[in-house]
Image 1: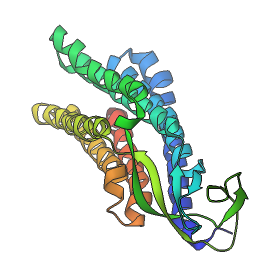
Image 2: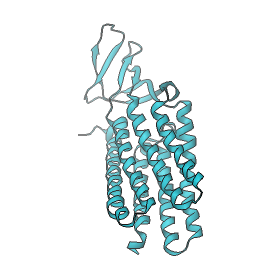
Image 3: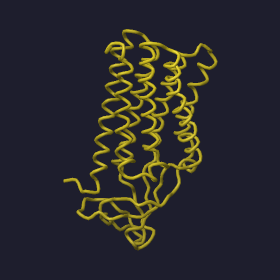
Image 4: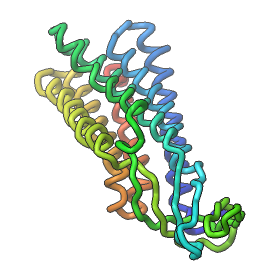
Length: 279
């Protein structure tokens, strides 16, 4: 039986698993059934976009739902401690998210732009950001923040110094609120990449589709509108999931709404890709 305090987390986890499945199905459809027939560069890049999202989301699911933090007491009070979650799962998840954005951008500029310099310059930025995520020192990405964390009552394992205690989380019917320092991404480089640069691309990509819809007619307009609305909803969900945003939202909004919006976005993108066939 799922404790009441973890129902929303379980629902959110289930929704993300559905999203991962949809990402993978879209990659299979775009690569094996669309690109191999049409050799359309945009469809290939969109397929790799979804494959990269699949890999990245797996790392984020592990980071958000499965990693048990190491906790070191800062006082005798067992409800106050220092929390450390392995940052490499976050780094790898973010790396693949930026790789996905790079492939999407590459397909769009090769399809829509004729200027060779712009075709090379615009897509390279997300790939640079991806490798920066892996290579930048941790002190520029992560810092400590006090948060309220819902965890099962810990099982105590005393080390040599009884004041510094390692807590190994176990299952218990009691669910306390543990106050501690959480090691999480919120450094200056993180903000520059994931809030400023990512926001620029999150605005530009839907606007390009809306511009194509405005210029186009018939099927082209309708497909572009569906893709524009799909990517708009997708990036709205990503904003709700951002670490510095979700701390100010309710639990429902931060855990459940983001994957729910991603599912709606994927449906719109799918119909945008297949609009001519369905019509």
